[in-house]
Image 1: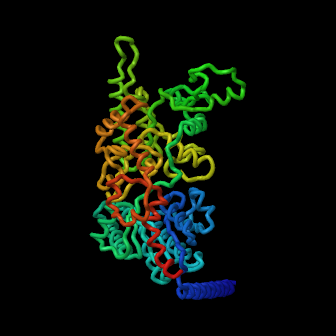
Image 2 (image 1 turned 135 degrees about the vertical axis):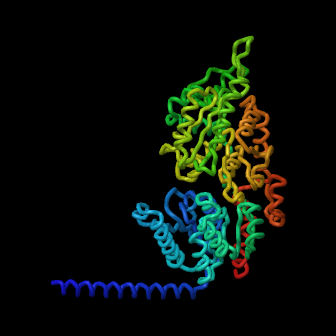
Image 3 (image 1 turned 60 degrees about the vertical axis):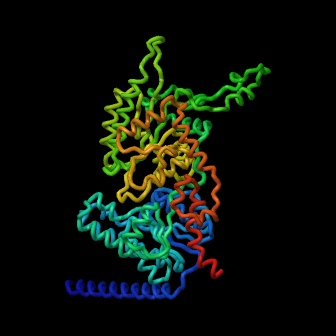
Length: 553
């Protein structure tokens, strides 16, 4: 009996070995065929080692390539829904990577990390070599993460002849240094990995001038080099009062009672916490004929912003140590004290003078420190009269995260964009790990005509022009001072209106693409020009990717 079992085991091992050898031979033959094929012009594979739907810049790249009629393969992990155009444009194919087995998350990091990286290597290589039918003309990769993607696209590009484009969002080793420290051996290894496999490519795109200058000087990059600042899509805009009214009619039910008591009373559908419907008959200065029921309905069709509304402030945070929410919390404390001081009752008529408005601070995002800070907020605002800070209600199923999931189907897309476009001021606590990247959240805010108060770091002035489209602060005292400056006499705040008008003027300036192609990138910040993603991409990237296609067409 045992001899029979041993014979069966040997037969199984032989069968398994033969099957594996056959699969290996087939794979080698297929790889050899791929190697002998020339890259197909007007085709691109875009690799994102993350959730495709949470990678706006790479989704915008895919959309722009597809509009040039490039066969576009967007490779990444399934998760949030991508922007609608990626599922409707004819030249785009979404290629989702499979996740590592679930047991990997249950084992220690020392064992899980190599398994996860090995699994990523296999799935990425398989997708680039077999799922993409023929070698693409370009392979674009997002960095970070650097490991293992930079090495993989370097290998595939060397084998197939595809041209590599690295889109430098940040430096991968600098993010790892936040967790392990700058002197940790793994950080040094990660830096050398990034230098070796990232220094040479067909083209390098950078999110800032500072990133380009540093990498060119320190790493001696080889290939075309161009700065492609993040810009919002063209449909982002400042919301009109009717849009704000519609939004808060939808959101009214999700506002908790404690917050509703702080906000002005609402009587849907005639008023919300921020808007009211204007009656035409009451504002006309001349007599009118008796109105019919239909005309009465039409007369209540002009929503406007309420004069007694609070100032709506929006911030997005990752709730991690590198975004110090404590600065914002301390600034709100100082604002509360200052509002109590200046809004003292008038001794003559015993009415309160509203010099500083109430603030509704809406914070979005997920992260490890959220529960700690929001517990502290709840304790503090029990005694606050002029400030309310909320986060939980934004995470309801029908209202996804404001900045992390703004591109989704149906009414949720409208809610996210409309909420951002309904705010009065944005707050940015982003501090770059490398000091050479810029926060996408500010780009989105500017796209909706929303001025910003932003925490200062090295290259922030490339985006936030202090006193023109926003204000820059270093600490909580400065932020509290900026809030007082911008919100005094709200909603008729001269300083805030000045920043809004600057954003409006910049967005209306027509951009001469051909002229701007010959102007150095540094001049972009001098005249404070603003453009959509499409205009910017067509000026910077389009000439790079059409060189060979136009030469051989």
